[in-house]
Image (cartoon, rainbow, N blue to C red):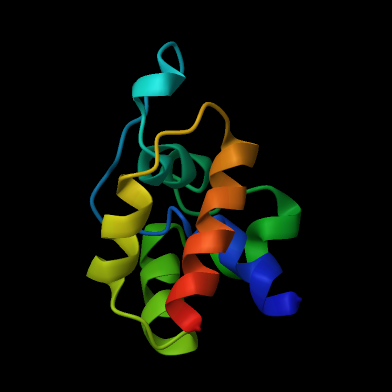
Length: 104
């Protein structure tokens, strides 16, 4: 369960260490990578409960995906970027399912 909880902020996880923007006025057009990345950028701005994983922003997420989960960042980012959900919570659910699928 702890891994699942740690995976949620990943989504975002994900894309790369470059800035990613999601237009909050048009959430249907934003990919989950953008929504998730905007939730942890700049580094140190994540909610307290996510600081363990997201405190370092995207570089921390990239490291966790690679070293902690043993997954290729490009594979994870590619899958999550194809998700276009309406809310951050929905993206969290989608990301959790994607990571679970990749780990199985």
